Picture 1 (spheres, helix red, strand yellow):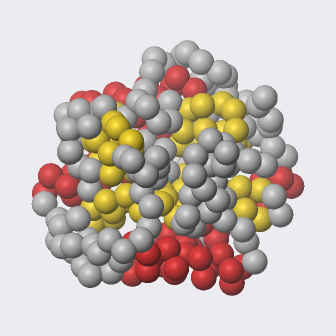
Picture 2 (cartoon, one colour; picture 1 turned 90 degrees about the vertical axis):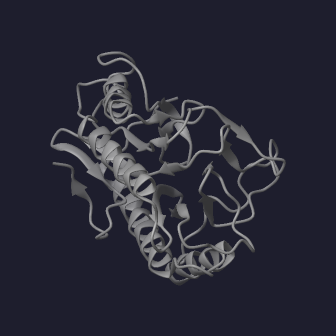
Length: 261
């Protein structure tokens, strides 16, 4: 069931979004060669604790999957999403996706960034830039009266014209009282198709882009998703609220909701 959120409800999501933005900023600042993904997870956990917020990642999955052990996902290089933080040390030239979430008084927010570890190849830097730009185009397309297909088409059209590929096995989602709600928000599709965007709809848009082919596979840990061909992948995400004035980014880095231009 799709639920439309009120300004009072999204105010709580905005609080959660501010915390998520702080988690991502702190982790980004700590990324360097030699740091472990587990260290980044501890940094994020401390921020959640300081604000009295709950993690919407840790323990997620039961009973279908083993409980996710971290408060962030850390996906390195060919890892697309859901990488488990632990003892892995980052190396010069890696790219790292950091996916973070928080709950405030039962309301969720979710966002992700992909960052370079030290100096990266020109190819990797371009992948990150294109994926982040694709998210911006998707947010700009999340206009009341348009349809979800317009969001997916904006991502697909841009990414594929850059010679990169869109992951199709994983998509964005509605968000609110649960981290994953209806509707699904694909990063591909045809314009003017799908659910019409109504005022109050809250969604997390998260393009996942590969240098190689779009196919993925899941590792034996049942969580970590990697590119099937071993190529690099990037992931960016924001939680937003659709309003008559335009899409409002609830996980904006400055901690304030920002209407996308």
